[in-house]
Image (cartoon, rainbow, N blue to C red; front, side, top):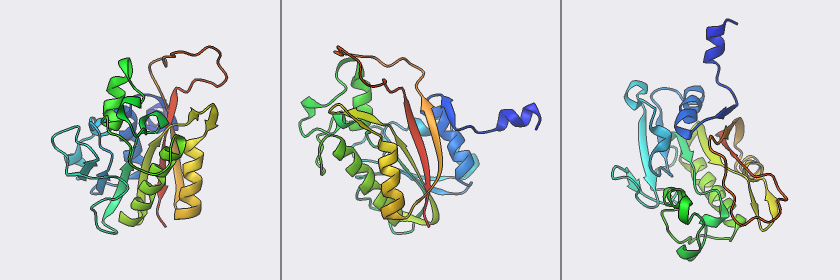
Length: 226
């Protein structure tokens, strides 16, 4: 293989922003002309470097609270106003830290220097779902996965972004927990996994003694419907 072909290879791990990595995932796993719903659209970071017109992508954008003025719909990723078997691809990126699932918004993570992250992922909105702490994170991914199975066509593609966390001093390998549920309960096939390493060094507040590695990476996972 020549060096030019080597440069075109899509790898499994990158130190990159989501706007840099997501287009590579889309190039590898989603065909031109696809109908795609990004159901946790946020501020649209994933799509900043994608030419929808050249790829003939029909993009539906949704989120539970509006963070841009051009959403296709306001909706909860756990209960989408979309028809069965109506999508080729669904993108799911809910908050993946238990600190963003609080019933009192004043107790949410992301104050101070992390306020922008909180606004992007939670919209400063109290959590109204089932479970608490890490269980609330899993519940959102599980219910979002059920909706994906309903709205995706045969051989459809589900792309999620997720991050492991330490909750109540317990290691929670969320990417494994969610994958196990998707495979065992929803019959998804796990087709690919990408590791995204943060460019910035994580900040640490109020830690007296370190007992777990500080996480500076997250995952994109690609699943296929039967």
